[in-house]
Structures are given as C-alpha cells and as structure tokens.
Image (cartoon, rainbow, N blue to C red; front, side, top):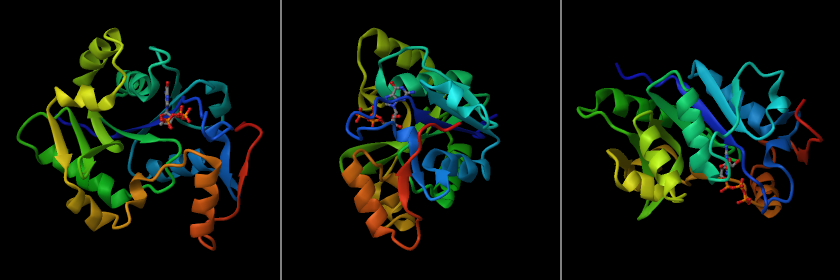
Length: 213
Ligand SMILES: Nc1nc2c(ncn2[C@@H]2O[C@H](COP(=O)(O)OP(=O)(O)OP(=O)(O)O)[C@@H](O)[C@H]2O)c(=O)[nH]1
C-alpha cells in the first residue's frame, strides 16, 4: 500500500546567509513556517517539523523532532523526517519556500500511486539541475541515507543517483508554475526584500519574530 500523507518541513539549518534564523521570518501576522503548516494541513494528515529548536513549536499540532544525524545538512533532516513519518512516502519542503503549490503536490502523489514500480523518490529537474525540495521521498531511502552519512556524503544528488527516482522534467513542472515560484527559496535578506517587493499587495510586510512561541 503506497501512502503519501506526510509532509516534512526542514527547519534545522544554520541560516548563515540570511543572518537571522529563517524560522522566524514573518509576513504580516504569521511566520512563513506557520503559513506553510496551515497550507500543508489542507492535504496532509501528518506534518513533521525537523528543527534544532523544537520548543518553539509547542503551540503547533505537528510532530516536532530534531536531527538524529547532526551537521549533515538537509540530508540529516530528511533522514530524521522519514524515520518519524507514518507514511511510506513523505513530501519534503524547506522552511524558506513561500510558494506551496497544492495541485503540483497532488500531481506528484498521483505519480507515486500509479507508478508500476516502487519508487524511492519523485523530484523535479531544472534543466540538468535537481530541485531537491518540493518533492517526495520514500522510507526505502533511510538505509541509503545512513550509508551516505557514514561515507560523509551530504549531497542529495548523490543519494538519488543510486535510487529508483522519478524525475519530472522541467517542461512539465512549468505547466504548473511557469515562473518556477514553487521552487523558490529565500536564502538572504536581499532575497526576502526582492520577494516582498515583487509580491507587494499580495503579501503583507515582512519582519523577523523574536521567537515563534
Ligand atoms: N533538519 C535540518 N534541516 C536543515 C539542515 N541544514 C539545512 N536544513 C534545512 O534545509 C533547507 C535548505 O537549507 P539551506 O538553505 O541549504 O541551508 P541553511 O543552513 O538554512 O542556510 P545557510 O547556512 O545560509 O546555508 C532549509 O529549510 C534548512 O532549514 C540540517 O542540518 N538539519
């Protein structure tokens, strides 16, 4: 039985380029990560946040965990999230991605459910480049991630290289998100300013919270 009802939000990064903890980025009344949680709850029964600061989420009805393998970047977060997931496949997104595309997520779920093979991941290509987030990862990958971590290999690209992956071509993904917004992430304060300026009118002003709760 292929189950796809978990979303994992990766929020355990160092935010070095941003200069402040990305988990605290706020647009108007709500932190971005809380907006993500609300949106993802529409289509997922289980939400898992993988963070270094679990105490900040005590008011959220989510599963909140820390990396088991620390300092392995997003791969460590995916590993902890997949282990905690009660579904065979989990959707994975970074906490700095403001555009969640529900139809695209549903499309990927359908690909998993209708695939003849047992896939290990569904991710999208941008030309030759892999988009590691806004994709699905299967529990089958847990031992492979552990092997990579043991080899001190952090790159998601190299993990997927040896796995049964369905790569969605760019042209198909662009039918859903012509300007590629659904893969956009905010790495620097400049990115945030640019994004806020581009969405002026749609998004309330941005700020940084002191803490989430
Ligand atoms: N759980 C977990 N999440 C991580 C880890 N490293 C990065 N992430 C998350 O993965 C996503 C992409 O991270 P990056 O932007 O590449 O890294 P970052 O540490 O947040 O930022 P920089 O320090 O500027 O590279 C973000 O949502 C991060 O919070 C980690 O070690 N553990």
